[in-house]
Length: 408
Ligand SMILES: *Cc1c(COP(=O)(O)O)cnc(C)c1O
Image (cartoon, rainbow, N blue to C red; front, side):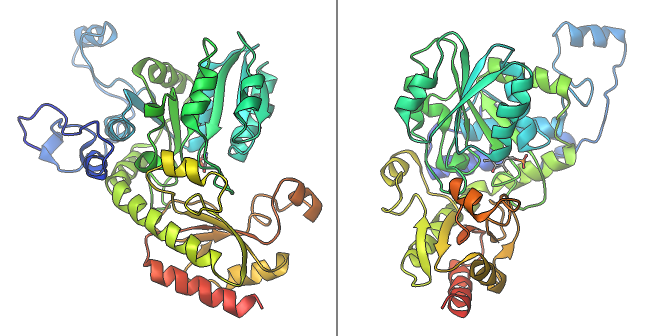
């Protein structure tokens, strides 16, 4: 990118090459301090004004500059611009965690008496926030099953519903939301905004805004950061909505630390490369597992056996790096299989360079009985694998050996 080239090199195309360029140059051509190549980490809680005239210029909007750390930071801003370019959004705002992005956005958009419609397989903590926390502030909600557009349509209360919140693909069954159809149903009513948590999709596999969503949210902790070394959250959308959410962030205080913002921008530079690889490995491992005698069932949107396969093929550029499957065993046998994996290590989370594995019955649903877990659709033989960027052949060999050693 030339110094005198003031226009952004990013085209609006969603082709992989344009995405890869946006990953590296999305922050824009602005010259960096000391002619540094990467964005410097600016550690300043507050910013000096030369005189009170400069202060007046700032508050009267004649200059665009920093003021105080809770209102903005140049390192955070660079990462926000990169993500906005990747999502094709007018603007993006970053937060200290995915949950901070979700809770701040919803607090900014809702008031007592409003109603939220949410798909029932959204992230557990998001549901908890909507059903429990927002309820204490007089916001009511209705959960609808994923993929049921009729239920979605009838759940909307004209004049009351302000937000339709969905997620895609979801955990652990990787259900894919028909975003254009959800938008069509929601937009029959005035004043309804569609929010999409696209953490599992990433902007590499889905540009939800181009399908009519109003806001896209991410746990930057997962693929965007990509190295299991930071927590971050993001919201992307048009300038007006994001600016209102940024104002709420200034009040609620869930900002991203500049160190984490640096790591996030650095992580996003390889997002296209990493997610491209994770898409390929995810599909290969899903096919391998589906053909394996030790495996009962595989849930992966890239397989013809998945209920949303056609939808995923139409809407997603790749099927992602998470593969969920059931082994031919019980709670204990499934644990023995997971313990026998050497390359895949046990941890919650996904989207990083390291392959992680978990048994949902023991992780998010530990305190429940077998019956209670089954009622929630979580059998004890369920395994969630989140592939990293290691050799796909090595991941496959590790799973194959562990299955043969532990599943008779
Ligand atoms: C992890 C996750 C979150 C929460 O992100 P944190 O950074 O852990 O707060 C929200 N939504 C989805 C889909 C997630 O996977």
